[in-house]
Image 1 (cartoon, rainbow, N blue to C red):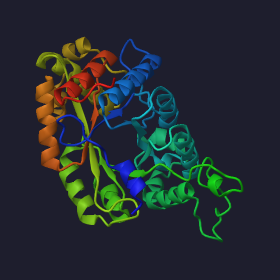
Image 2 (image 1 turned 180 degrees about the vertical axis):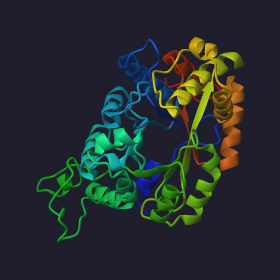
Image 3 (image 1 turned 90 degrees about the horizontal axis):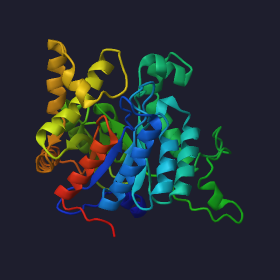
Length: 366
């Protein structure tokens, strides 16, 4: 096993947390807010996460959603790299079928050069959007081919990252730059290191593939909670030791929001629930304000959806959120929790991460 790469994957705990805590950012845009403000909030949260000892900060790829400004993870990560020094940065994830593998290898090779030793490449096989938008991204309407070809695309991307296509391969003389080729060129001093690859999923496909390949796995518990334990079990059962890992390592994305009192926490998470109602019914928009969400007249079917959705969001006071996160880690056996705090305003999100850090006694950087 490559110990250096394994060390880049495994998280470190802090304070009284039983597992490493990390952050997943969707760069949410609320009513009355701009994408510029949302991106500034992302910088503020990344700085807070770094100063309080959260292990990594990932950005998700979504498209054609007014309330989610994370369509270009690599661009956002470059911006975050310029404003942080230690925290791991990565994609949670890049939707590989939307892109040519060489492009992703070049983008993340560039990020690795900007922030050496602290970049993760999380990959998913879903489009991160609706079918029509996916067709526009890929310039094809044969969307199933992209998902079905995911293992082949992953293998190609890995070859580009490692610069090890075999002789005779059509791509043997093509190199992702920045990348390992610079270290093997005459006079080259470029580091051969490259970002560790993670597989992301919300079902069993990527869980099994990650296990078979001996890769770390990230599961989207925050929107597929019913599948979490079965997927993690499948990952562990399928796992084969590799040059990357000698044992399974799985993190789960968790929707969690802490506030100074239970009522405020409920007000904040209701905004995200209303956003999901609108998204699921073909009406995506900006994240509503707490006032708009409280005043919304939910139909019986919408109310049933919202009640089910909120059950899977850990929310309340800091102590309540800590208890909920601890229970989730114990119940799933997750090796790491990646917290996403979706709310209308950046202030509520920042406050939530600060409260969670305090609840676990995470140290403050001096």
